[in-house]
Image 1 (cartoon, rainbow, N blue to C red):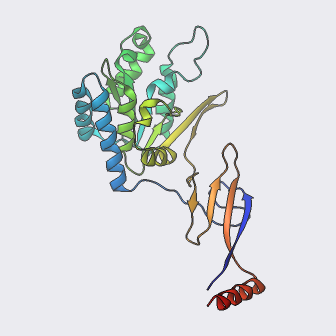
Image 2: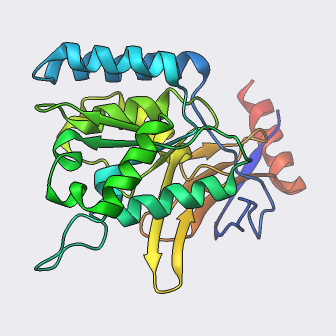
Length: 263
């Protein structure tokens, strides 16, 4: 009988998910096609149950089936309100435009534009009627890159559903932590794994716009092929690694003797 000892140690990973001490490689754990379909169906079901007019979301589903999928879906409210938590602040269409421009710059010419999702009240007010903002919204509409969710709707369902329907290569541009009670209605086994692989965060600084793509590995408890376990330490960049080690010869001999005496 093989006897395994376990070596426990704190470790850290490089940018690609390789541990510096134990040299093992973390994996990127995404949803399977079947899990993604179930997740999308769950979002649609909850949205239709909770929307004031369920038909509004069904119309969006049909619209997306004809025009989608979109590789990038932009949570317009989250981007437009970034950094606007001071007196006199206002919704910033320019920030959404900068995100759209940066994505277009990264993608090959002729690629489908990002889909900006905004509540209708955001696109029908005085701020939206200002000349540069109006021109930006008109460009988005013209190339199929804008969806205004109707009055009484929760735009969260719309951008989340569109991003999930983008499949493996899709990204949701948002800093929303998605901890509201509405997100707790979704299957946690799907939601957290999807969010980990597909949320694209952003930052506006004095140096410009920074897009923060998900790392090429998943930060969650993982058991690798060799049987080792790796646990992310909450609030830290470190991991706790439990790696199987061959037992010393003396320990194996003692184990064999105990087995023999037991029989």
